[in-house]
Length: 519
Image (tube, rainbow, N blue to C red; front, side, top):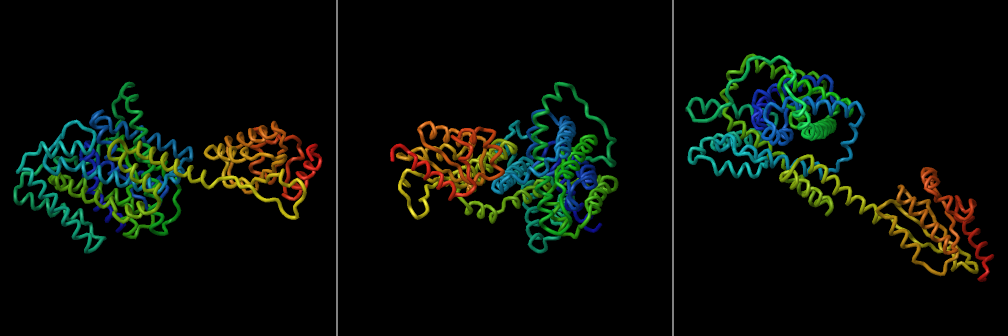
């Protein structure tokens, strides 16, 4: 319960700030933290996960709000929740483990940069900074439109917030620095009568659940954005749950149940007028560090925020927007870890390239596109490395030598024979001349796909067409069925040209040389 109250204090300014930053308002952020946080705590797959509005979701929602309006967010929340729910039912939870570490870190750095830039309009006292969906362009436009020197007042409030958070963070990491900083700045702004835009009136109770209004055309136009939101919700939630499991022994994480819980959470949030929710890494980490061990802490976190709505809505209404921007700027800056960046850049050249590309595309274009391209680039480098590790080696025949051994070639195929390496293996074997018998050793072959099996069939057929007898040694049981299906075995001159051991294969090859009319 203590952990839940602590997380609630930390979550309050973040929920308000994320709601404002996404364009749907502080009320929606608070509703999401309460409703989605409670539903995900009950139905999710982690014992300590804390869910609600997050910075990554804000980055996706802000351009959607500009394009489709504020009224579309609740409907997108329901649609995305249904998609995530179906993904959980279909047991797709383990798929996040296939996302490479450099992609995750590049994604995180890009999100941090975008969140920071999204706060610039409020930081300089500009509302509705144009229609650009790009955070960089919107930030530049806001600075240009700001009324200087009046804009120095919100900038000063932001600087004070950042200074308090950084100082308290160094004194004791468990102090709710953002909460204390907002109290101090709000009191100062109120007592001094500073001309700062505030959050404004908040409801003093939760709204009744309702189905958002929509038409068929609206629904069709929101399907694409809903899939993007759902992909982000699934990825961030599963990553957050995995981080929580690594921080303390709080029980296993059921990835599929986590998707079900997060899907239900976003659906419930949409019915109450909230926004899509995900597992929140920062709040989950605070929860674990505060001693949480069960779902009770996340439930208490939501109840604590609910108490704010019923008991302190008027107090929250006077918080300056610039103060919330300061909280998010510090949060965003902490997401960009110089230590992690150095580790990635010093790891391997390919990982560094994947990291940089993912970060740049995240900032410049789109989060989901960035993850997709990052995975594709990482896959390209992985396949290239796998192809380089694959190869074919010609081996000498064991002693004692026999007459005609120079007409026998033993080739050992190593690693993987797949679409990235098959052609190179084919060229390597067919470049040899004056050979009457070829022995293909497949016992060291770890992986073969349909392309590799088809290439192997073509190789055997081509060699047999040239009058060269092909013997195959050491096919693994798991590869045999594929080779049979694609005709590799049938392409051999005789069924007894398959061998389990090398000595019988060599003896058989020498018998072919002895019968050769050239000898």
